[in-house]
Image 1 (cartoon, rainbow, N blue to C red):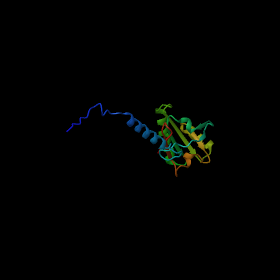
Image 2: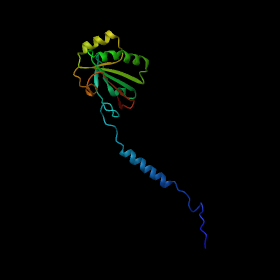
Image 3: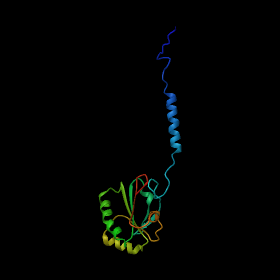
Image 4: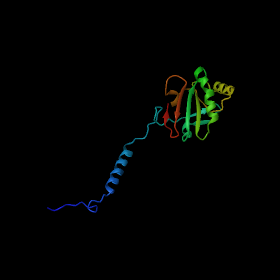
Length: 158
C-alpha cells in the first residue's frame, strides 16, 4: 500500500480567488446601493430651497452642507414656537458657525411684522420668511413648531 502524504507545496493556498470574490461582492453591493432620495423623511437628503432673511438676504439651504443644520418652522402666534426661539439663540451663540447652522423659517406671516418681532427680541440667528408657506420644510408636517435637523452630509433627521 502506498502512502499519500500531503505536502505544503502541493496544497499552497492562493489568496487571489478569494480577493477576486471579495472585490466582486463589494462592487455588487456598491452598485446595488441607491443614493438617498430627496425629502424631509429621516435618512433622505434634505430638500433644497432658497428663502429671504428678514433683512432681504438670500439663503439657500444647501449652502450649509458640511454643517449640522437646525431648521425650525414657526409663527409668532404659536406660543410654543416663540418659547423655543431663545433656546435656538443660545445654541447659535455657543456653537461655531463652521459646524452648525441655525435657521428659523417663519411661515405664512408678513415679512415686515416678522422683522419687527425678531428685532424686538434681539435674535441674531438667520430668520427666513416664507409668506406663502411653500418651502419644503414648512409643508413637511402639520402644525408648528416644526423642528428638523440635517447632518453635515445633508441627510434629514427629525
